[in-house]
Amino acid sequence: MAQRIRLLAICSALALLIPVSSAAQTETAPVVYTVIDLGPLMHPDQENCFGIAAGATINDVGVGNRAVGSVYQDEERAVSALFSANGPRKMVSGEGGGVAYAVNGSGQIAGAVFTDLPEEPCGEPTGSQPARWNAEFRIELLELPDGATGGAAVAINQNGVIAGWVETGIGRRAALWTEDSVTIIQHVSIDGTENLESMAVGINDDGTVSGTLTWTQNRSFRSVPFVWDGVNARYLEPFLGDDAYATSINNAGVVAGAVIESDGIRQAALWWRGQIVSLAPLSDRPNAIVTDINNAGFAVGYGEREDGLTRAMIWIAGSPTDLNDITPQDAGWLLQMAVGINDDGVIAGWGDLDGERRAFLLVPAAG
Image 1: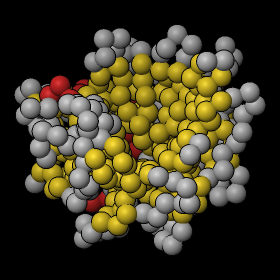
Image 2: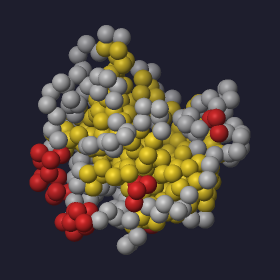
Image 3: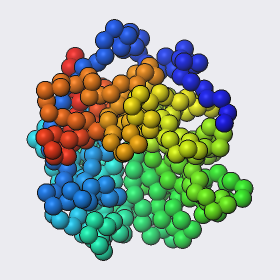
Image 4: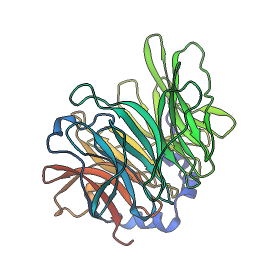
């Protein structure tokens, strides 16, 4: 395996992404967060179903502490939702439910609705259609390119441009939606592969898209992150011999995600200016994944033990911290997953509160 480029080796460069005042603050004391309860994610009868593709979850947080995801409406489906301190507000979804994946500063929401209920209990709904909700929660199904049968809108930038994927006759393809058009992103080709597919997961305000290519080679499943600048797509090298995937991109062009090492361990990683940066895990949780990165360079995600138990995490100036260690310990929360961070440093995620799975916001105490 090629020698890894640790954050320390290029910290002077990455420091440009982090305000000096914030970096200095973390050297003396960690940021302390207060917890806002956003309400339950799970229908009481759905405990064994958590984690299905359209299952109840929280996915993103925007300005004004607007968080989006999905909640269970009944025993059969989860519907798209906007979360606030007053609890989740259900939004228009399809007959099979829906999920909201991302929200921008104007209150526009990107996601997907489903036309059919799962065929089996705890199964996945079918008929995914990309959708957009405006600030008044009016829904619009997004245009599909010729030959596509469905898809999902996964990310949205401040200009309202949406990235995601569409289902075509030859597999999934990354797609871009502007106000009046849809474009299939032409991904790079990789020699000697089969079943090559692409899915976009992030878009910054310049319109640069991040996503993941997947394929099979010698009967093995493979994956690698890619970026598309509006003209050309290029893939981002993981460590030699490893697979990797992207989860988000910020306005500086830093791509966040994880590398899957040959032994199955997932290593939190950033890609910047053609270089890969591995982020340290928590000492007791060797698996680590970055789920989001804001424009100040603060990354959030989670650390996972071998038994699957997770803890929500933040990396500041490359240093990992368990978010449970910097939130009030008398609040009754076990913070298990951080999924989004906005430019005010507000973090969205989910965890356990007195035995119930609930969504939360973490707000910097000084903010």
